[in-house]
Image 1 (tube, rainbow, N blue to C red):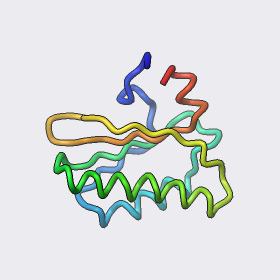
Image 2: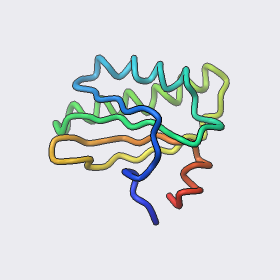
Image 3: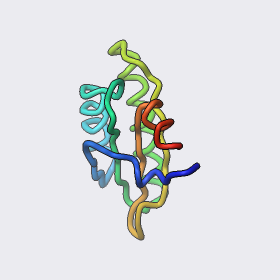
Length: 103
């Protein structure tokens, strides 16, 4: 992996404190779409392991389900990483963007 997920260009950053906000973030990502865009999305989550796992699961499965339901390509890659001392992050981006960045 030549680049770090932190280096992926994003059009919007969602800062989620709990699982309740995940559905709104997923809806906006699905509505905006991934195909044909040169940017992705970043979701910041608290460092609490249990909460982060729940948010991450809701976001990743929700995006896949939403794109399938909409009829869009589900060829989306994502990475989870330590963003800073207080937060984890998930970066979601179209496969072609990931490949162009060497991810």
